[in-house]
Amino acid sequence: MSEVGTTHEDLERFLAHHHLVGAGLKREGVAPLREGNTAAYWSWEGIYKGLMQSGKIVTVGPGGMTGMRSVTGIEARKFPIWMNAQILMPGERTQAHRNTRSETRLVCEAPPEAFFVCEHEAFPMERGDVIVSPSWTFHDHWNRGATPALWIDGYDNGYNGGVNLNERLPLDAPYQDIRKPADYGVRTRGRARPHKTESPYPLPPMRYPWAETRAGLHALAEAGEQDPCEGIHLMLASPVDGGPTLPTIAWHAQMLKAGQKTQAHRHNSTTFYFAFEGAGSIHIEGEELRWAQGDIFAVPAWKWHHHENGASRDSILFSIDDWPAMTKLGFYRKELAQP
Image (cartoon, rainbow, N blue to C red; front, side, top):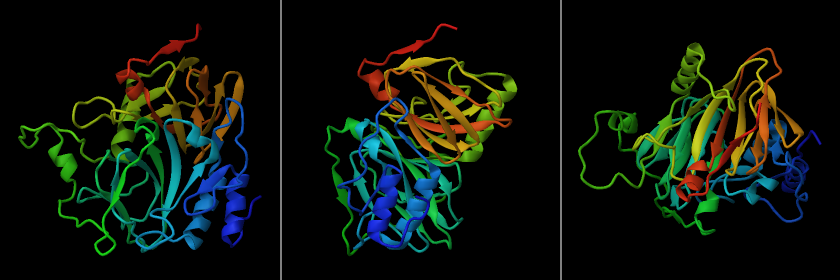
């Protein structure tokens, strides 16, 4: 099914065909859950076409059908963490809210005039940027440009007891005012910080620019430093203590060199991947999943897996993993296969 159609029913059928569901659309009668170690996989073709058509017929913002417009993998919600994709059309702004789950975003494409607003600070949307809105921080999205803004969400829903408290600003004042200067978080979370005696928690919102992440990957590559299981591998560190991105999940970026095959391993945390550049494959318990740029896929907990890049160019994956939560609970385990 390559064409989406023009009605809500057409869109629902298209998304179900690609094992997706959309915010503001019916979720009953969708395709059944797929089984197997590589079942949690969603192609960019389905994600992108579904988002673009959703942008035309599903309204967002104050008074809209839904607070925000997204598509989510049908199988994704059986995991404690997951990724989905979201679109904001030109001129749109979502109603500001805060919730108990953490919300994290990886920008796929956006015009220069689009940005996220979190705790009264504007964060640019540039391809490859990761922006983190920690638990119970107000945030909204604003696209003042002429083209759509698309991004990937990463959520830690499985660690809030199944109760995601959500508080929205009132309909007569639905948006945050932007009163902090540009790069406020970056300038006050480096080595020189404002002196405060109270606890640094809740965590501050943070932007991880793609330019810095890419520079880090290339620095590791030039130094010949890599992880045997993940290739050239970075974690986006917390600005508070240098640890994982959030107490529940860590964001990672990794580069798989052309022709590379990594060592098989397994861990009892869940990993969701977004294929940022290039193509490759992941092998999970003997099943091969081939992925291309824009695809989303997951590795279930405690499954043997390894990466392969059979292409002639390097590939880059972004991922979220709940090893921080598993570690804090005292449960985390990792095992490497014998060479």
